[in-house]
Length: 101
Image (cartoon, rainbow, N blue to C red):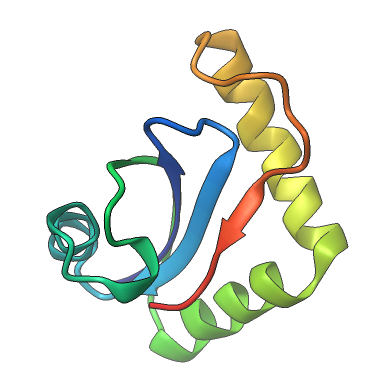
């Protein structure tokens, strides 16, 4: 399986990161241990993921989310609604993005 995931910064709740991986648990640990250049120095929590059978499909979805503002906004609106219900997010401003893997 391959995963496209969204992480939320634990301090700045309006900051998010999108990535993909074949090992979601390992990759999440890398983000929080400082072994990822794009997310170093921050604590992250996993707020969303999608599973794909093919690596190519996961890569394509990640690229669409990173490159197409409308698609990303649609997903972030869904994530924001879910997080708001849980009281886990500050007022939404569209989010700041960290990119790369």
